[in-house]
Image (cartoon, rainbow, N blue to C red; front, top):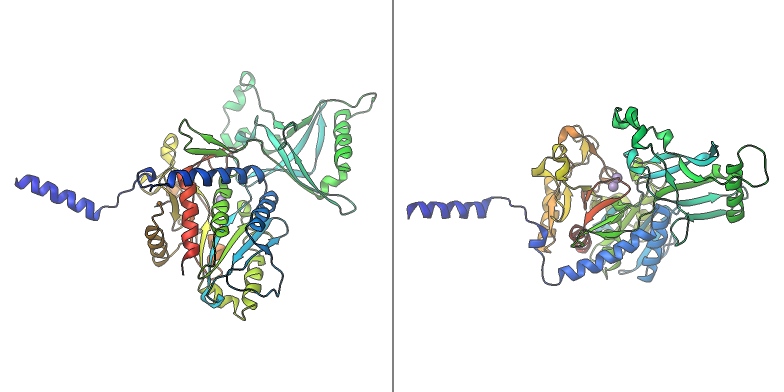
Length: 470
Ligand code: MN
Ligand code: MN
């Protein structure tokens, strides 16, 4: 008897004291599964419509306007419940739902990014080699180069012609469109390459996109394939070779978002990082009626290359937007920021059992364990992290638990294995309490990334309850 009692005391203590992580599927409530599926269908559409930050902005505007948002003009009078947005150079967008409380009480922010790793065309991209035509590329963001070879690619972007006309280019996304690809060595001749280090075996200058092979007919000059490609581009877009100089064209994977697994519990797609959090923030914001505090959704560009530039999170475009809102209430921007809260909504790495050696399992995010909170990101001793305070983590924990949102703490991987950053430090530098939160991703930065539907849905719910906090 005594022994049994002791066991049961141990059980009691474990129950009362130990932190146990639970699979999110064991925590779902009635109706959650249906809502999760419906939410993920909307997300997949967002992915297919937005393969670049510009396209994400366009689609975001369409969704926002359908939900009653209008373009904000400086000086516009605003009342609680008003819904406004401002586009920054077609590549980033800020949206706000005005709260009951004045802006001196601060705002609740979700900041995600809508740029994803890809292959940008160089400014003089087109050349011919041995009667094949190619585009030279300079990759954007951190990629593992070999993953981008021998996959179907689409071409998206804009070309600004000599006369200033700006043309949208999108080849590959419509049914019947041609696609593009980067060739790779056959294994039969790959002996020497196979002996090289991974980061040396695939030089960036070999990431050249095959764009044509048919020579111009009835012509005996050189570069007959290249000139035939230029002729096609000229007929379709009215552009000449020099116009590439003022173009932003990117090759992106030609995959559509799809369900993964017999049980359809996952989504495979290009660009989950970070459209999965962008969509979660946006979907949550669009559903707000009149929040207590003003809610702001920031969808930034350039996160993948350090948040630099006019459309990145370091740009003062964000301060100008919130500053304009503040001015309409005669509130100082720094006073607003000081009392604001920000979820830096970005993805984290999901534990991959095939590569267990780079993860530290106790602190890794697991697929289906919910929204991943990162107190800090960074590398080599948290360098580059904003490192949220215990109070901030405590606040988020309480809010999420109160609403029954499934969440987990997450760290990218083993301390010595590497690291990464987000926009969190740029928000925190503005004197805004900030913490990273987002969806765990398998194969992050690959042309085809995978996420769990449950984690997508819980991240959206997490964003929503944060927006609704007083
Ligand atoms: Mn990201
Ligand atoms: Mn990234």
